[in-house]
Image 1: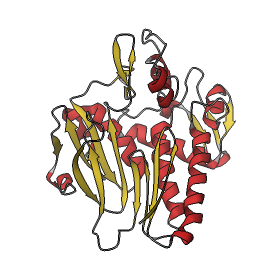
Image 2: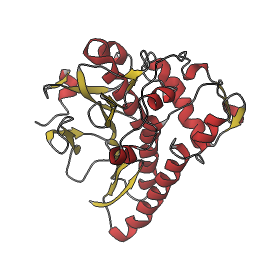
Image 3: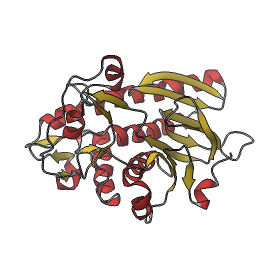
Image 4: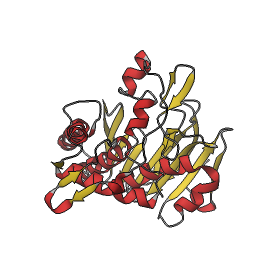
Length: 307
């Protein structure tokens, strides 16, 4: 298995594929360029990104690129499927909680903002008008979008599709958002480490994942101090605050990485009581890690855990 590794989207990106190294190199480069170009399109940390320009255009019609339209159309669908627990209009809440710069900068310098009172009216993405045939989007004034998670999952899957042009057995790992294409020679799945969410670098178990998507969301990984408060990036749309949940992480396996990414977050916010209801009509496999480090899941989901 050949591989390429680089940093983008504030995480480590790994491209892997079976084949001749010289023949794979153009595929690695093409996938890498796509990821870097997509990062520039979807980041909220650059004033020049398409997402930032879309947010500044609130109150007017804005013509978006095909990629931006595809992700926002998916996002609108997921708002309903997750019963509002996925909400890309939580950007004001993320900023209020101190997540106003990239995580790399926050880890190096900390945050300077002080939390303010939650007062904004909840609108959600299904209140935003989309004219897909014209690639036009209208954002209600006062609303702004954060597409970080769903875009990362979508980008990983699209990059894997590019790499698949050069090898039928390939994978893209964007900081835990993965798309796995085909099966490694002689294997019935891809070995994927499930990291202990509260002990970075420690492996709880090895999962055996078939072709498709996988994503893990955690309340323990992207964290920071805001004054005396410990904060994390997973906002509960019902409160506008970092989620309080009885789980530390959730891993989802499904046909698409963006689906995995969205539901990993939604189920983690939902917690053990509500997660089964949120997931009941969606074709996904999921399991969770609680605060004691126990892996919890159904009989079907635990089939993916080797031990």
